[in-house]
Amino acid sequence: MNYIGNALSLGMLDHLDPEGSCCGTLEVVALTTAEAAVWASDNEWTSCVGHQDTALLFSAMLGQTVVMRRESTSLRPGDSILVGQYNGPRLPEGALQLPTGAKIRWMLVTVG
Image (cartoon, rainbow, N blue to C red; front, top):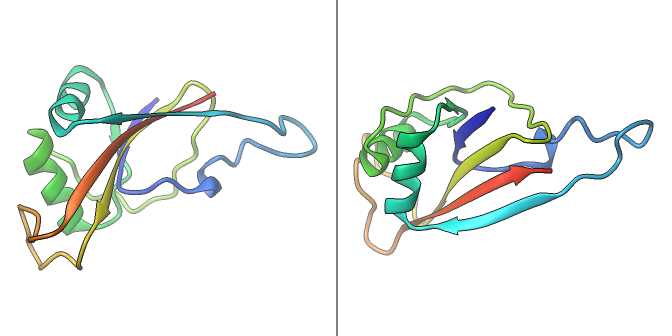
């Protein structure tokens, strides 16, 4: 399964359990915005972006409709998540572009 999200939490790796599969790996690859847009276009994915303004911003940046979906997401081995990590001041309501001094760092994370 593929996802687009605005964060990655270790809580998303709920398949890891000391009673069973207790180890896992994460492969993290930094992408440019253009590379992230190509990945979003070339793959089927589900949004796990939890904020409407962030979903609108990601939609504008990736050229794909990214919907807000505030649900728990569990990542399993073989899953990938394109994380747009926002760094900057709080986004103004309805922002479709980044405020001055803000940036999105795109990371493609694959669970092993």
